[in-house]
Image 1 (cartoon, rainbow, N blue to C red):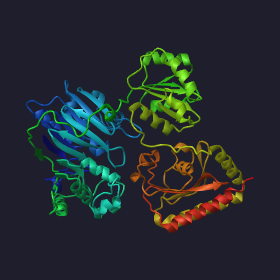
Image 2 (cartoon, one colour; image 1 turned 60 degrees about the vertical axis):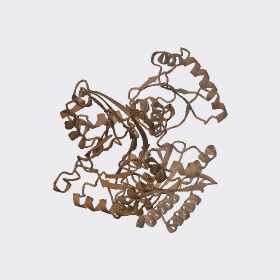
Image 3 (tube, rainbow, N blue to C red; image 1 turned 90 degrees about the vertical axis):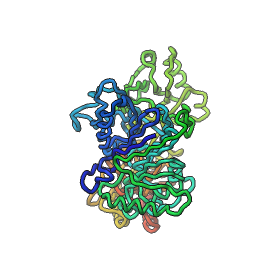
Length: 609
């Protein structure tokens, strides 16, 4: 097994006298097995040097696999300059996670669009296959690969690789879930996300891990998606890692400063039993091991079909839509790169089925019984594809016992937002878990909507509206010490589909998160209504439930949210809420003030007749 580092820098390439020894190119690592299988980890600017080296080899490999951790620029900038992609007869595979709204294929094509680069991916002369990954396992020749999601803005994957009996973990662009561990190090709490990450590293021979910051630097970089030296060092020692390679060096870090950080890390483990060996990865550095057991090495875990990391290829999938009342589903299918086969009649749907055998079928029906009848008519010609998802589109959630005997794999409840529809289409076409969920409808929805109408009637009184605006202004004044000028406070009513802004208070630099025209599916306030309980998110990027939400990863960049229920006649009609584009943390005094204001607002909204 051979490892060679071609790029070790993070965020942006940094050439110059201060980075000569550890290197200035961004992430790129080469791994080769004794059998000659080639894996390249990430495609930062270091990929260019690796490409030139491959071309100079007397028997240069004509195939290989490129494993991308995520599609931020410092990890994909080398792809347009990888010379083997332009050579006929070469065959390469690119693996990596998709984005929230786009496949890996679409993201990489976007980087090489004419707006950014003069050569398109269609100009590659080599055969290049692009494959989406999720958590799971797959193999490259005699190399076993296990994937796990990391904690970083955007969808990011780490790789645990078993090659020639050695285990290498590549975990770059990962932030501790616990701020305590980031700043102080130590062992993670049992059952925590950090403990799960430690299990991913456990017992590895070599761990290549992001260590861009120190504990002192972290406070101003919370949520940026990177680890601290203290966290990585202690976690590697706790996980019984044999050798730790500090990686993704900060572009402002000089060679001398990296030397001192290595010594600092080594001092943390000095004298401990089985102390982890620690170095900083340097461009051109080789790690090479020879083992007696070269072939037939058992992977860490069985590679069964259920745990495969390989997602179904997204681009160009056929999706059959027999959903006459919801034509906008066709746009959702198109937006994520698929072909929508739209049918207005059952006979037309059956013809599409017979011609294309689509992998996803959406059928509008009143319930499971009607769905079953329509499905039998559509699929009467047989010939089902090996992977298929059948979706019932209906207004009311069917009871579980009615679903158990029906040929239904998923349910899409109406109404739904465009963003949620796109999310579900991605889930159904890749057979992977959803990265974000819309808020469910409360069990008392009909009664609740009646009270929303009562609140709307109360708002016809101009004095009440003025009073509510005063309450919102006061809420912003109370929270101002916790946040900068981007803080927004608002009163929202949550109707059958839309989030309605009743009053809002903006700062000097208002956050771009929309307050009007937001579908209930896409709103944070909808989750408050669904729970009928306060929702407080200090940092969305550290929230497993919300970090992939469209308002977090989209243009709004929402980072903190607080919502308190507003109730009319016992039913939750909306929220008094606040949000910002940076993390904020309430104390008990601010929390109590918001709850008191919410009670006063609820009283005024109850005044409708």
